[in-house]
Length: 125
Image 1 (cartoon, rainbow, N blue to C red):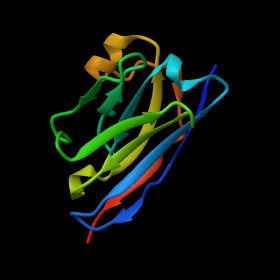
Image 2 (image 1 turned 180 degrees about the vertical axis):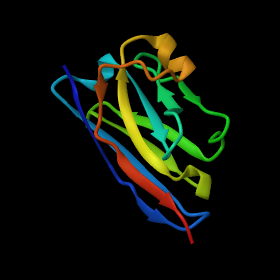
Image 3 (image 1 turned 120 degrees about the vertical axis):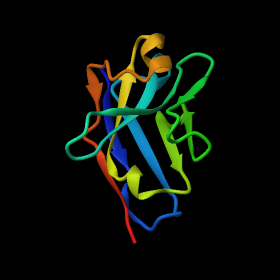
Image 4 (image 1 turned 45 degrees about the vertical axis):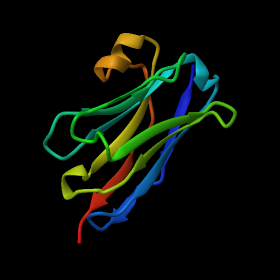
């Protein structure tokens, strides 16, 4: 099993940046694809980005392409989500998840037994 802990959320003005971290324990992260999802109040959970376990291919939702960058540091057992040019519509709770099926990573499908507790991102002036 793997345990995930997100950090790095906060309040930022539109146009600002944040870097989220997803730290793992219990098992090496390089076994899993790691995805970021977000959920705003009253909305469904939305796939944001994913990085594969093997070739580190990356996938992004159209709404964040060109603004967000996902990366992983297997030595630190951590995955990062660099978020630039933030918009008010990016406001949500952000969750990382460990995916053991590559297809879920490509499709940004929230199919996982392993989730972090979430970190809140609020973009507001």
